[in-house]
Length: 96
Image (tube, rainbow, N blue to C red; front, top):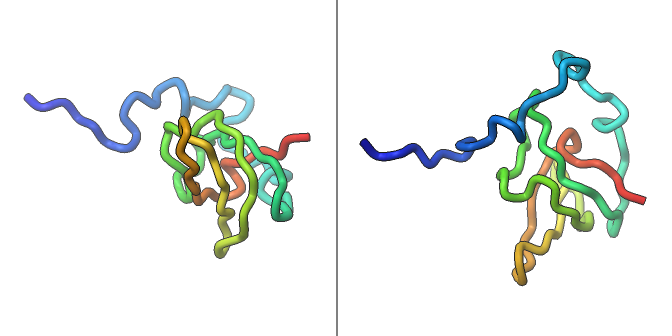
């Protein structure tokens, strides 16, 4: 039987939420207004699936490039390659 290789494979510990965080939305994270050039950390929130970037970007830091609808476009270095990640604000945390 062929092994599953979906987008959410091996995310059991990454997307798990602590008991105190279950069934609640961090409104300050959702309502935070970023400016171009702001530094952010990509931290996946398992409670919201919409606008969630791929799990390989969990824990990465990057810079806000622009806004795209409700989401933000983040420039991230993946090894030596520069990539752009489109993520909703629930999955972003401001740095500095």
